[in-house]
Image (cartoon, rainbow, N blue to C red):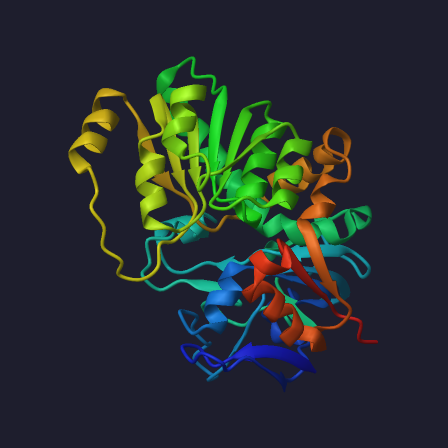
Length: 368
């Protein structure tokens, strides 16, 4: 069967190849579920893996099948699977357990292992192919009428995790009720963060570096306020609008992280959802940031990946969003391709997202 893969660490190695079709028997004890891929979404992680920045192949191969945001339909199940059946629509979870205590209690997204396992990213093949086989524990059943929105479950689950952990941590404040949030970076994750916050009734100020009218329209449609930091710096907005109870950094740009830290209100939270690549050096007003965080009882934390609980939360919120913001999530999916064989065109769109007005890029698997 066809699969789109890279040779990890090698830029320009993206290619299509033939791999063996899996079977339910590949999973022991009758727990196999054979899933036909329907749709796969690409994101910044896929882009960086394609650029050779990271990604690790399974030990038995020298290639890595990419793609970790997927929707599929169950085609066959092992004799010991009783919670899924043929025809069920499912979204696969990305992270797989390691050996730490957290992994053993199904908090694999909180592993303390230095080695981790993620489908399409690290040591496990991904979903940009025709079929895959999995255990039912790592498949989330979704309503058929969600359609292509189901591919948003994975990125939305990361935001759900961050929101949940923030609210748990802020129980320290007893009566903390966030009113205002700032989201830095309105890529797919930043827009989903704004969406989640608006579902919770929180005022959102969203920032891109440069003015992008199509993103402004998206944010304003759900009641957010849009700013281009190149025209209106964050510091000016904070002086006018006030500091934020919640600041979410979703750019991966070092100087933005520094600015974001200084936009947090007393008793507020800075949530980091992006990874800052490279070895860029920059002056940081550590004394000021340290003093403000200590005297202001502020919290900073990072969130990455998620577990089944957060996928289920995302599923519920997508259903809720159909009533509160009808049609909005569909607009995040800006480009769709009819076949996984169009992977080069899809990746080109992703690599040039700003010029192409791209947010989420999807490939269909239209194989028979």
